[in-house]
Amino acid sequence: MRINLRSQRGSVFITTMIAIFMTTLIGGSLFKFTSQDMFFVNRLKKSMQAKYLAEAGLARALSTLGADWDNRLTPGNFPSTALAGGAYDASVATTGGRTLVSSVGTVDGVARTVTAEVEEPTISALNYILAGGGSMDLRLTAHSTCNITGDIYATGNIEMRANASGAVINLTTPGNAYAGGTISSSGGGINVAGSLNSNYGSVVGFPVFDYNYFQTIATTNGYYYNGDRTYNSSTQLPVNPSGGVIFVNGNVSIADAQSTTQLCLVATGNITISRGTTTLQQFADYPAMLSQGNITIRSTGNSAQGRLVATGLVYAGGNFSLSGNHNSAVVTGSIIARGTLEETGTQCALTMTYVAQNPSGMISSGGSGMAVESYNL
Image 1 (cartoon, rainbow, N blue to C red):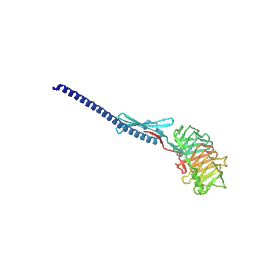
Image 2: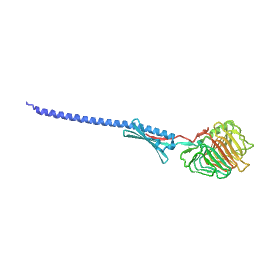
Image 3: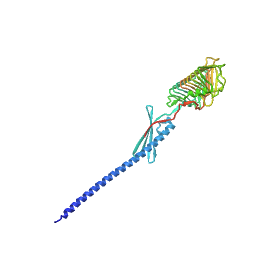
């Protein structure tokens, strides 16, 4: 038999070409897939790096906000920063009362964003020498004085008037006034060393006290009274009582001069001083006077003058009022009222010097740092 070698050589050539083609095709596909895998791996690596940079920027922005909330909308406080072969850029926006912090991390054109919603910090009313949850009225008539060493605050409006003869309002050291509403002043007797800040946007929180805390101390030492209580020349406030707390489940009326005593006077109702001088020295770190209702210092003439001399915090769950004729209050500490604060009348004197305080018996001081509500990483 005769074998056709030329035909066999052709078959081998075709088979070889097919094998080479298939090898090339498979090799190209493998190269393509490997290249794509390397691309995706590299991009994933950059994406993770960008995420870490974004988180670093967010942490830096939150730290800056916590230290300086008032300048949160100043872009210069959150500059774009190069780091580890990439960069982060943070920003802050407030919309509808909600504050969102965003940070973008970038590495070779690959970007990742992380965000956090934060709640603004609150300032404690204990930071002020006079603080009112409502309005503050300092409307002085003839020969009345108001000398305040510290800062004052009102959630509502602040009104200062010193038009009458001898009427003087001195606000010093540092002497700033802050109001959630407006601040108005009139009269030549007003001297403000600091600044007047209307429409104050920062949130000021008021302390919350645990009255059961003081009731327990008073009960343990025999100074708990259930019902209204009147202190006058014949029934005096206890002098330096054991435990330091007098607790009255009702109203307290002080109608005559009292002996100087070291105590904390607590009432679930109102406290009224209408005649004579009441001098309360601070016991431990307790407030000098604590009322769930109003605190009123008033008189009706020269012969009936209500006066308070106190060291420590004077706190009213309602209003604080110094009004009438020839009344006075000298407080080394601060006066805080969740309602209104007022000094009105003739020849009335309010003299206050601020002392930083953190009294016992508080459930909350009213102040808090910036809080992170949620993360979106």
